[in-house]
Amino acid sequence: MFRWFALGVFAAALGVSASLRARARRQTGTIPRSREPLALIIGRLALALPLFGGVIAYLLSPGSMAWASIGLSPTLRWLGVVLGILCVPAVYWVLKTIGPNISETVLTKERHQLVTSGPYRWVRHPLYLVGICLFLSVGLMAANAFILLWTLLTLIAVRWVVVPREESALVAKFGDEYAAYRAKTGPLLPALRGRRSR
Image (tube, rainbow, N blue to C red):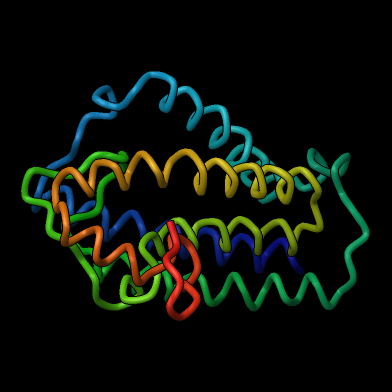
């Protein structure tokens, strides 16, 4: 049963993401990944391929991931269901808000505009947050240590490797405007009042 919830949530979230990203590409084009540092490209693949592979393997053939199964309580697995369902409209909200400014790289587009509305009012990188929550939800539904561990590793890499690089590009493009925005928002979670979060 939990596998079918995971399949529905994952497919719905990817469908929404693919649709809105395709629209953004038609409007403002794309930035070739080859313009990113090679180390970043390799690091992204090293994290993304096992994580996506583990999820797809579980969804298509649960037995192939049984070696990483852990005994989670039904409460935690149902929490994963709820979290996953919430991720679907959250993906739509984030991508609809950022619109044509979305980029598959840490670089900014030529006509990139600084978005500070919607979820960006509180969090600078809500799409990363929603993505982490999506994989966390699948890991909980699957009760799978591999998916959960790789989600944690991805969170660490996003927060301390990807976000700083992306924000360097945003500061270079928007200067003081982005610095002021960063001073009152958190990278992945809302900042504590009166406290700057980088």
